[in-house]
Length: 261
View (cartoon, rainbow, N blue to C red):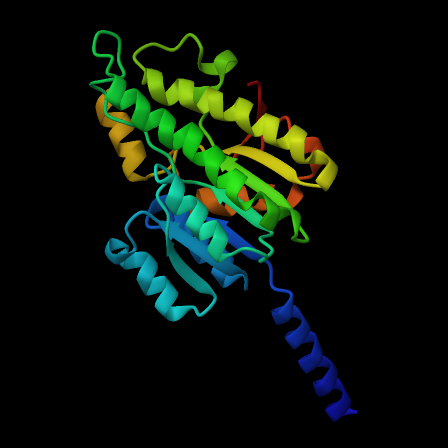
């Protein structure tokens, strides 16, 4: 009987390993992206963790060295040929969850009234809108081929026209780019709905990251409820687990509240 139970347990473990879910995370070298890689690896997922400069991603490389399930890949959202090349490398591999985490706030000079700069605009929109949608486009077949079929893009309530529309002293390009990303992801949801794909747009809340620190310095923003990345990611993962196609046209914050676009 003991041998039989052991054999059943072994078969179960082998089966679970063979069908381990896969997540691809952009911007995994620090902050929220790094925490996604940590928590999904700890949960037994296969993690494709991307970053612009793998050689400089010390913490991410250390995580990968301790976890055979974590693979570090180079991916720059402004490098379309690079995005296509990485997608070609993983052609045919199911990716259960694509997390568009990478984003760019941009410097205050260049996107505040009186300092508008086209180079700043191109960098922020290129990353947050074109880059996010290009990664989604490149890996959509991988998501469709998976069991969970989920695409999640991280956003900010600062991109809600209704909620943040009247706020002053805010980064024009960042806010507008997040609003544009919302529309782009809603379009993706509509186009891939018949294939069973679930699209989530989730705000992480105020999180103690380099971007949050920059936002506070440049725009005087401070939130007493700021979280560490581990807290925010834990909440987001729980939300991701509950997503279905009714979530396709919602903007959800890490506190579980739904906000208007």
